[in-house]
Length: 207
Image 1 (cartoon, rainbow, N blue to C red):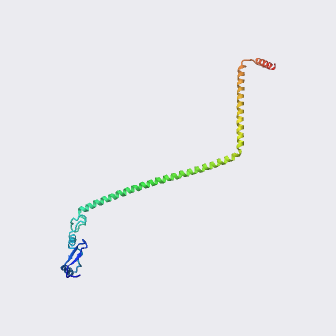
Image 2: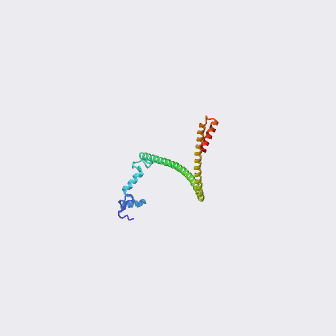
Image 3: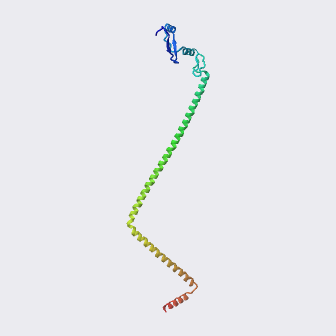
């Protein structure tokens, strides 16, 4: 570094140009210091911060040995921390409640699925039994097809017999009615009178 003239340097903090004079160069060399990296204003601010610390938040001057925040900013930061902590706790509680509700709903869905599966199994069994019954009915119907003419003839014969039975019943009813009438007619007639009437009717039929 040349000490014959002033030189221009760039402050590493604020970026401005500052002059490093010849006298300053000699002083720094005598003290064994390296060339300054900050301008006088930034160096002065740095020294003030070292000897008079300020709050990192509001820049209020602090006592030596104090924290990097003033009491007001520290209280505000504490309240903000408590607020965020409470929000986090509320969010965690809400998430836990949702998790419990989800687990309960999951259990309900699992039970409903189990019931549906049981119902499906029962329906499958019923369908299988119905299919077997239909197969048996079809086989029975197929076996009856050759007997259909004979069954038809039997049905016709049964209908004819039923008609004959009805005729017989009607005749029997007439006979019973006739006998009842005869009973009423001869109820007060003697046996001799009945014989006479019978002979008289026989003679009339003979003539």
